[in-house]
Length: 124
Image (cartoon, rainbow, N blue to C red; front, side, top):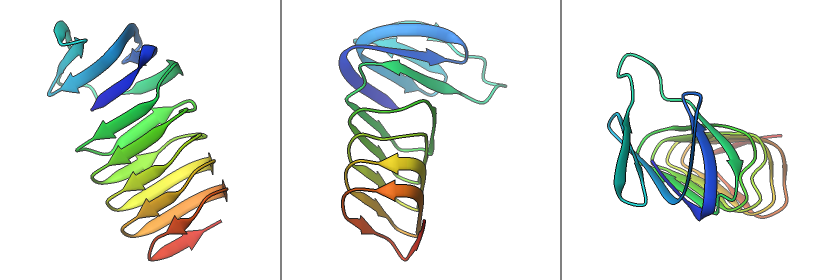
């Protein structure tokens, strides 16, 4: 998972990280290219967005606590609160509100989508 922004602030498994490019690769956390931590491989990785996130990309499913200002892309599914940007997922999108466009390979389940929505099934 890659989190981009200017002085982005996120919590990963309860610990706060700040940087312009925060990456989780395997069980390691990198900030601006420098290794910061090794995560416990037995625990599920939980990310909470605190502020200044412009874009999130992931080859895995994304489960986010909090709102995202920017674009969210995942190869599989995206689950989060509000997104003030576009959301693209390989399979499903489950969000509260999306200010931009939403696209998923299978389903979109959101309260409100202000942009275009494209999926096999859209649930509101």
